[in-house]
Length: 237
Image (cartoon, rainbow, N blue to C red; front, side, top):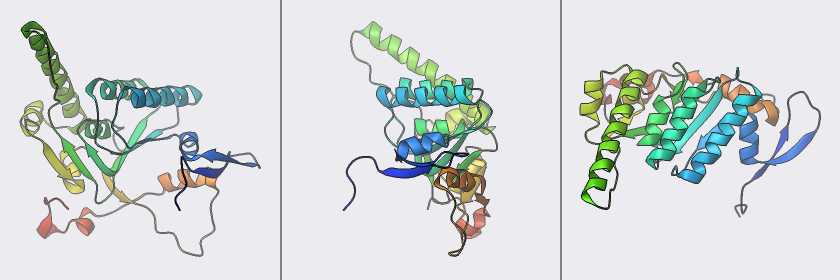
């Protein structure tokens, strides 16, 4: 039977001899890993922002890791995460482990250059931000103008993060555009396609307190053709 609630895992702080039981998210935070795996709303965004600011205040030389497997979310809360990522002193690496749709895809591309990863079967989908304006005609017009301003900002930032011309980004994202891992690499959304290292069955076990860091540092590059053969390159998995 699956446990109810957040699992608790044994964790040993590096440099200390005692173990302690902490919830899974706490253990990840201590390794500077932030998991984005749900719709980004105001409450979730505030949790992410607080975690980022706290970890940055502890040590602004160590990299933060965003693990992304989610559908994106509300516009303003997602933009708050994006702007905070860019304002931190700590570098922020991003890693798509499933799918990164809409604004989650923008966050994926916003990671530190050289440290934006995706697993072989990851998918990314991007499109122009949408809104639902209500009220009087003036209110609707003002909301539409603001949405266009935000769209231009996002497209300009995406062009910077990918190296694509703004005009191409604007054209490509006029409709939802989907990418497999190889296509995301070619477009500049990520820097590498990776897979976990193969660990031998008789290999010595690592501490829970340092194992995640070792895993993150040991990610191996793979030839994209291993996953997407040349005859099927460009096709979604």
